[in-house]
Amino acid sequence: MLKNPTMLVAIAILAAVAIATSVRAQESAPASGPDPKAFLDHAENAKLLAANDLTAVVVDCIIPPVSAAASVGKVIDAPPAKVFDQLYYLGMNSVASWAIVTSAGIIQIDSLDNPEEAQRIIIGGYKKLGLDPTQMKYLILTHGHNDHFGGSKYLQDTYHPHVLMSGIDWDMVAKLPPTDPGGKFGPPPARDMDISDGQKLTLGGTTITFYITPGHTPGTVSMLIPVTDHGQPHLLSFWGGSAIPRSLEPTGQPGRMDAGLSAYKQSFERFFKLGEDAGVDGYIANHPYRDLTFVDGKTDRIAKNQARKPSDPSPFIDRGTYIRYMMIGMECIDEQEGWVRAGKPEIASRN
Image (cartoon, rainbow, N blue to C red):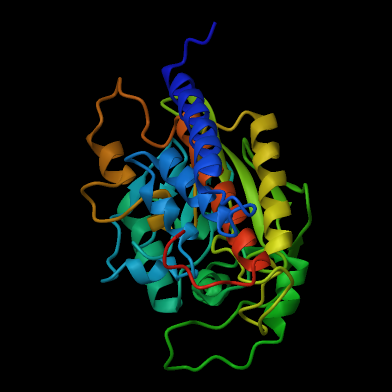
């Protein structure tokens, strides 16, 4: 018998999605054949799954695709925040950086846009939280885009952590032109360590498992991260590169290359299954407007986490919500794939 109410809710929503899809398919199919815009059903499914709490994720279903970052508006710093017993948020409302504190040092994930942000937000946050930046042992770069590696050379040169990224994204970054000293983004770090698929990184009592998930870039890295909340163990899913490619095959130039929508879909499906098999019950991301870690300091998960009582559950942990979050991603991927395969038609209505 199922006793977890969040799982019951998730199952009920999935059942509703299946019924709604069947009804729409029957209603929208013309007498002459199937609806050429049937791929839009996936967007409706995503909205059902989103309910009232995950609407931000449905941005990936917009056709034609848009930049989710454009919805951020004014960029503001997040207050440095402790999210789990060993996991801290150090970022803005536009891009994220995370610190995992272990008994043997700190694992830093991503480095923001540039050295100034890394110094002000990451290192400044360390000091506000009572963390020692000289204990930064590893810097993980989820992928080779400059809004994630822009502060890494400063951290590498100043605190000397090992810097890790997938080999194929190191290769992509190596082909970038020199960074504009007056630009928004900082230079890439010196190549250090390559991440391989299935690799484990252990520091102190924490072991992160990496997976190469091509799509957003050729060598995007996603990971499973164990944490504890008031001593209770949980497992987080961290999808390393959002924004669905707009073509089935790889496109772009060094610095903004992708592996194509087909590879993205395959990677997402695989990572979803890996998380399910491992028992994931929560998720985080490297853009806070996607996972609602930080939005405005009032309605986001950091605010809810800081306001909760010791006996309240973490707003970052709910297996049913995690399943919905990932299934919304799948629905949007299927919709975008259907739109591309249909020749990218202009979408005004289904009629």
